[in-house]
Image (cartoon, rainbow over all chains, first blue to last red; front, top):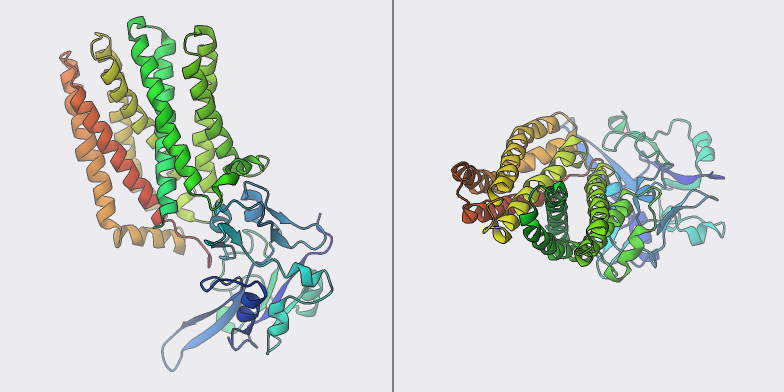
Length: 186
Length: 284
């Protein structure tokens, strides 16, 4: 039983895709060149003058039913009871990469040099000290927030879990809320 | 495609083939109808040990930290991959035990039954592991058919090849081969019917499934044609010739070996396609 599920809120209408969140995450986790735990993606379409685009900043969504935790053969991957964050014990990970196949958000990354998988752990060491994850504090547009998902839902009643471009939230129950631009809305 | 996926191609095909071959040889031997063939069955089972071992070693190469491979069985309660490793490992240990204790018929019977059960569980767990991923091309009946199909087809080919090799002086060998080769032809026909149905099931099953279909039609079309050319021209044709010759009482081992080699190659290419065209849904 999760005491208070933590999660992210992302305001697509404010995001300018500067990727400061992505870089802050990469720096905090000291990631190799080709790996990002949080990535900013841009979706675009239409034809001039009716073209459209929207951004999405996404990392691990610390899902309510994380398929990666269920599938992990070693138990290296767990969902913390106190805050619902999904974390990887890299000492126990054997690098089978089954979690990479188990995530519809592309959140798990195989780090070849170490032979293990890494992912966003919600900056658990900062969060337990009452601070925000690095990506949230780095956001110049204040488009990212982190906290109890129930509180975030109250604060942003229009935010949704399903949008065009993402898999159905019914698959894993992502702890993520998004304020969508019109083209992103389902 | 990375070397690590090649490791999985080798692992799944060789382990499934050795499981299929074991179950068939065990069934033939436990029937006890042809005592004179006993030595051939014994030797055939011995050969399955290195075949399965190569598969198991390949599976370890897939891991980032191979030395911790044994901890992959820690999460049997929820992980199908844990169960896959557990049953595959159990199959191998029991296979070795049944070879070592072959001179004790009563113990051997029990071990053969346990080995066959562990093997069947291993194939089921392998298939279930892929159902639990986020890749639509791997979910559903297609993977079950592909994995059981490999176990039966290459298993029958391998069992037939080994029995032809070790029992060629024995008059009983023709009856055994007729059973195995006939079975292989039936499995092949089922596979040929099932594959287009599998492709049809991908159409309209979402973006990721359709992406798989697109890859098979474009970048991997040559490999797809090669996969079925190997299986049909290289596998089915010699099988049918061998079957015809058996009807006249002649055992043509060369044709059996040829069919086995091509069917194995066909399954390897098929499994390569399975991995390389598995597209994750969502933004994975």
